[in-house]
Image (tube, rainbow, N blue to C red; front, side, top):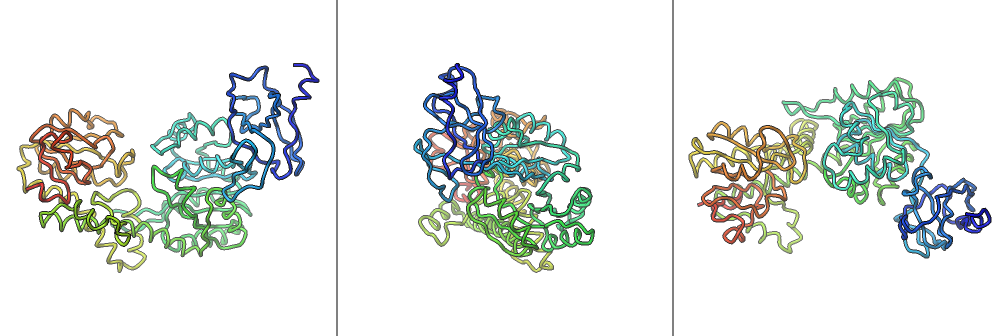
Length: 521
């Protein structure tokens, strides 16, 4: 291509109103196959603030493009139709003649996420890197870090693997097991929380061990964001610790509020709670999370700590109410699902009542017990919820024993994770159910589409061999399940539809869903 011709095709500077340090994310409407010649880059100055931009001058129609990563990689070029700009809307979208496009900031702040290879830290790392931050993942799990840097998620999270693969070539995401990377960060986000022990007592020693390990690498004017659930008052203790050591770190607490599996979406739509001890720390986290979500709620640190615990405890109590209602329905010989529908349908006062099921997982019970400990064990609702929810597996076994002698029966459990369509087994009540059934039944076999291991059998094998089937988790794969005639099915969640059972799904199996007492008789 002749030099004069290239000069003629060189795009003009972006019009005033588009910050020169921002990058437009929009794929070429042509597709690379219609481009001719090689990608050539030009350094040019923004009309607004003089910062250098790199653009591409291939297209004769003056399409302006900018790159998300190395400008040697043509596949990453973002193309924009038109150059007539208007002011951005509140969601960060700029409007041009060619339509609406997202404009993502290129931030100059570096973020380190401690424990960043887990279910809380990694989705946050991806979202922040997608917003233009440089993010370092610090974690002791070297295998998980290797998996991540190879472009694979170490666990299931909707949309995360696609985003990870797109972000890795940008260089904005890195990982390490070495704590020294903390010193390079402007913002350090710690996603290590406080668990409870076998006595349901909050344990902070692991949390403070990690804080002590990384504290030598902190320096003045860094911001520390505590992200996972912590025992009330712990944020103050961390603040005091840095004050005692003479390190001017801005300590904040900004609790995560995501549901596992939906993290990428919920990080952007749920309002973010922020708290801190000084104006600078609050300014930093306000700026950080304002780029992710449209609404910020600012409270005091202990208010934020309690807000997080209240949310999880309330959810756990909701499940306990549903499970208590199901127990009453089962004993009365009526169908809880029918009662639930009658009570909640188009009734806004009770439409939040969940269906019955095994309420478990790594957060709800733990946080309810943390709140109980904080109240000096005067949290009666929390303790009652624990008794109801943790008693569900034993109730299932008792109901089966009323109907059949389990001593000569093979029982198959479908689903071992703590909730549907995930691969996380932490604190799953299906394992408690399995242990109880092993005391009563001749044999207990199991299947889960998201888990592997020598004890997990193919679904058709479990269906064929089992005399009794218990649905432990309502994975999507189990809906509309066909089982041999005469098989006893205990559907904890009501995921097998009775109205279709006679026609195709159950093929004559004897069904006893939790809350479906009439069907069990």
